[in-house]
Length: 119
Image (cartoon, rainbow, N blue to C red):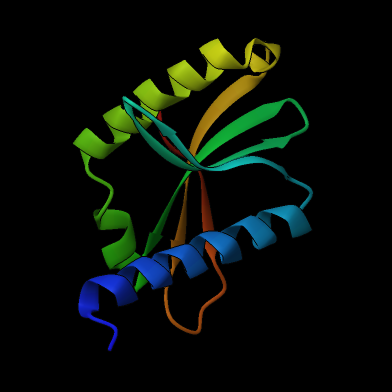
């Protein structure tokens, strides 16, 4: 039997896959998924032209809950993880950096919020 936590984890994996596919259909190249560092994790790293986007995926019952679930502490961890990503991948350092969010709600197309926050 699948417990609540396992179900949430699976739904999160599904949401990330849906977002990655959505990005690819719109011309983004997904460079990394679930990029883990000691400083934090980035759900998706994607490039579109001269933009390098660090994308946080949130799956909730509705878009309002999804956007509200991205805390300032979480944003800080993602920024620190992005800095480490750039140290390890210097070839992307000259690109325009952006922090995006992608929101997932049941039976809805993923919503992409560009420049969801700035550093």
